[in-house]
Amino acid sequence: MVKLNKIYTRTGDDGTTGLVSGERRLKYDLRVEAYGAVDEANAVIGMARLHTADLPDLDAMLMRIQNDCFDLGADLATPDTGGEPDYEPLRIVDSQVDRIEADIDMLNADLEPLRSFVLPAGTAAAAHLHLARTVARRAERSIVRLADQEGETVSPAAIRYINRLSDFFFVAARWVNDHGRADVLWVPGKNR
Image 1 (spheres, one colour):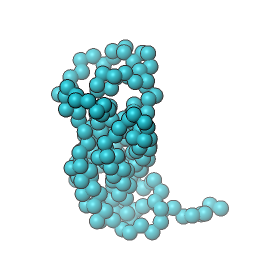
Image 2 (cartoon, one colour):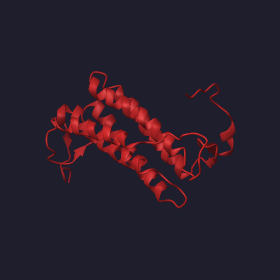
Image 3 (cartoon, one colour):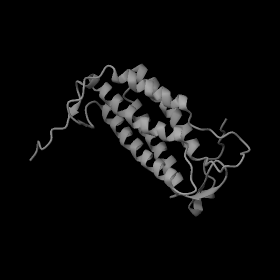
Image 4 (cartoon, helix red, strand yellow):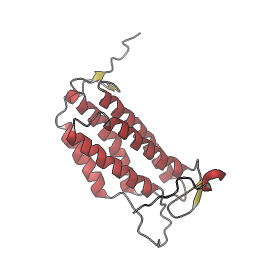
């Protein structure tokens, strides 16, 4: 269990931050950027949840996803060095990917078919979920860039999870827009 007694430590005053292993990295390091973007997505989920309290099934999914985002952050903050660690690192696992896929399928089953691209609008919940989608996509770009960097590893399950996460937010945004009936559709060239 995590126990934080002191919030500021002054150890980051030199522009570095500590990974779970104790290794120090610059605050603009790609690994720090990746788990920071996941943290930002998690904060946006919290904002979306202000508008989903009356939708208990969706709100429960979002709460699970917020917890998974902390797991993903811990996974990213604990690089696989190939050695035998003194502790078992927390990693995203396939069952978390399977769960989010099941949630996507459940929500998607009720949606009107898409007739055009959807603008990030509609209800307040939908707008926040679309914002979460875009932040999750940015996190995914950072994570994939990190995985592609020489000497860095990211688990395949973590990459699959972040990819599904933005899909989940897209489907959830449509679902809260009256199952897609209140989606705001893109009209190509409308304002020419």
